Length: 346
Ligand SMILES: NC(=O)c1ccc[n+]([C@@H]2O[C@H](COP(=O)([O-])OP(=O)(O)OC[C@H]3O[C@@H](n4cnc5c(N)ncnc54)[C@H](O)[C@@H]3O)[C@@H](O)[C@H]2O)c1
Ligand SMILES: [Zn+2]
Ligand SMILES: [Zn+2]
Image 1 (cartoon, rainbow, N blue to C red):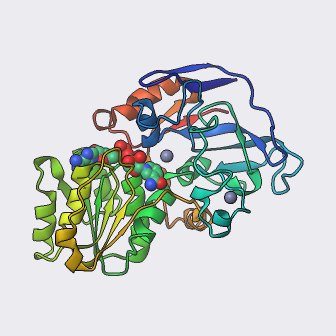
Image 2 (tube, helix red, strand yellow):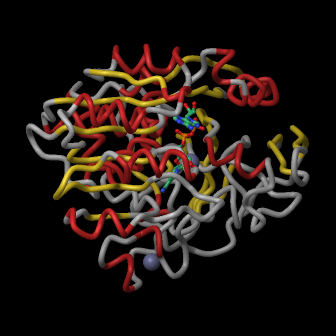
């Protein structure tokens, strides 16, 4: 089979690889029909995630069709259409029992990280009963790819951790796929204002079509001041960080209202300066987290009902064999006006 293989920082290849095999009775082999590229894959290619070693097939998102199941898999059979969670979960350990699948003792984020991933014709999924979700006939499978990672991430680590409430003023720093997912799912709770902040004017325009009430181009470095002005000097109730650098965390801590929540989603490679000398008196809550994907079933209901329309995040489509070109487009998102790219195999 063909797969996208990491070859060390800056290097990748679309090449022939051995077919994955069932290793444990709880495994399934899935034939990939749709997959995509995540901002985290770009981090890996920069060498930011050293746990990923050369020879690893990348990718942790996708949908497909069950090719084979181990003898202990009871929920799925050959031919079933499935959605792959970016998080593998055994369903039995202490963390899984608390729905903290991200910290599963025999799983967590391993796909395209510690084991071979979904940017391939076939993938082995451990603990298939818990890590896959059935797709009923007639659903928009392309839209469901957005449920593997970005929608649960924006919702769980941004909106739920940030405790967005009706009437809140919410600022989201970073209008990439994850920030957009936070924007779309924050609307479930009817905030009074949804302010998107980014340096890419195209993404800010797109954010408006997704329901942002205000946008701030942060290229001049005054986003926090603008947020304070826009809120009459009070600050925002919820600040969601969806970039992962000190500058964007600073916007959040400089513009948070008393009693507010800062919900950090971004993967940080450098330490940030936490200004407790200003924050201690403001009764703020700071949360962090790796997505659990325990909200996939709920989000899937909202997609089926048409409340959530994640297909709008898809800007480009390529045959799976053109994945190198898809990486080029996604890696130059501002120039290419790219948000989410879909790779399809049939
Ligand atoms: N916590 C989790 O479980 C989890 C899961 C998935 C992704 N992530 C992380 O979430 C973050 C966002 O992911 P994404 O796929 O949307 O990434 P992305 O790179 O597509 O989007 C980031 C956005 O931030 C903007 N940006 C960069 N510098 C900025 C600045 N100084 N001010 C304002 N905006 C700025 C960029 O223009 C871009 O639109 C990444 O750090 C990713 O690794 C975390
Ligand atoms: Zn991801
Ligand atoms: Zn577990």
